[in-house]
Length: 612
Image 1 (cartoon, rainbow, N blue to C red):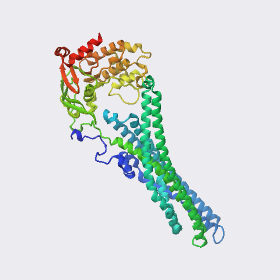
Image 2: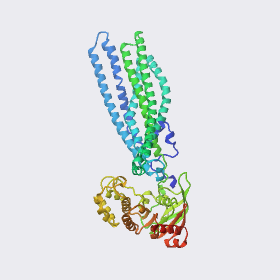
Image 3: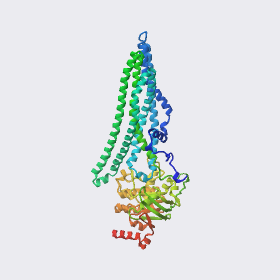
């Protein structure tokens, strides 16, 4: 199977219609395909629901029989028959209540299992997407699709689903029994509801559109809020709190307007159901009385029919509200399905994967070109070969394409043209697990998770269990790596040593200290090829010395590709690669390139003059 044909297990067929264009039932079918657990045991659940709905009509039947055959019996009131009928009705209601409870429990279990699958698959798929694809949508919106959108689905499946199921069954059973008692009144009831049934689908489409807008606005609001929280320091530093507050206020107001528009239409739909239900009840009272006077209906049948009308109109009113909740859930489902249907542009190689054994790593760029979506090319015709064990410094002006080269080597994205090879094998043919073991990226600003220093360094342990605490062996490996990089003296200066908390995003550490943690993490990962985005320009001299010493130890015996922002790094490298306007224009040692007197020589001369 070719790389382009490779698919994630369970990924939707790209030939399917986009989730946003699907109707209600098509969306539900697609959701059942994604979360088949939702249908587990559905046959038994439906049978129990039928029993529960049928039990509710025992009261009208008991009323009719008690009035006509016990209270108004030809020989006088038959107390024993009345008691027996009441007892049978009570027993039936108890059985119906038990069945209803079982239906709720079964639906809750199956829905939770299905939603677990849905949430897990959505979260996994978000992480399977390339960094470029993730960056095309605000993080808060992605988070809302895995959290709040799934929550709307959960609310409907666990409450609205059972109510809709029982309501439909109750309407069917009530209609059948009403027809037995009086086909004339039954036709009258349905005639009153017919206009509502004609108008309701059109109104539901409007509700659907408005709830889709609600979900979109909610995602945008969550994105704006999360962005403001993450960027709080920058917001304070530049004194733009008022501007940020206006943005958040605008997002909140837009969400409110969308919700009010949706709820206004919901109120109209619900009120229409209530109005028609009351109208039906009044019509039945008048027509039933007239038929009773005419002798076509007994008193018991008229009373029973009134009870049945209540059983009929109640679910109809409830159904309108449930359908509104369904539209909200459908909107959430479409957004989640939209994530699952987003193609994975950095796909697994599939059956033609090539093993990439550990060992010294060589790197080759073959006629590589790359352009970001809807943008001009940022790399053109890049040809470069790096022998195993070589330290390479990539230099160039901002925007020249240096960082894009590193992202291609890490396979955060694939080249538009050409290929990047590791030991002569196209990265697209290497399984991601093998690639992550061999290629380790140390970003310019290493991301730290809320926890201790030990826990953050331990993210470099690929074989460590993802849940639970670290084993003593894992802690020992972390401490050994810290000592190997010469960072034990720094750790000794911290208030709690390796148990020192780093705070959210590492905010309790300085920029240089965060970089030290990232280097220790990379050493623990023990890759064959290191990608280093140099970050020493923003650290103090003491931290710079520690970083430089740790980098030397980390790079020993490995191939390194460093995005160099300071030319002192290039001076110490085995090979210097100069990138200009997306092209590799010079390759050689520092001394050779200075002697050549071209791009690198001019850059170096300018740098030397600034450092004096």
